[in-house]
Length: 110
Image (cartoon, rainbow, N blue to C red; front, top):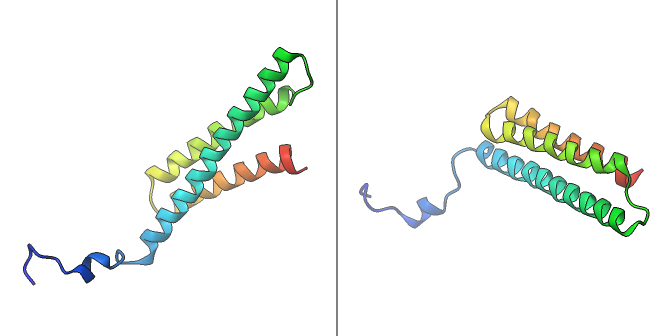
């Protein structure tokens, strides 16, 4: 086979090593969690503001502050996960999962 022509089997083959696939999956998963937490923070802020304007009970000040703080922390950890390789990226991804889990457990599941 010449350099200019590529076999279809060669194009269909996954990249060498399962680590690249797993790291891309992990980064995508943690990025989705971070983005979901941002969306949740926007919803909580919107609900709080709407309840304030309508003068009805709402989420309160603590969730309206804590959700955006958790979202920012998750985005910072995700940025580290996206820009680094190796164990640092893995630990940053775990930090995203922990931040999301703590926010959900504290304000939604408990």
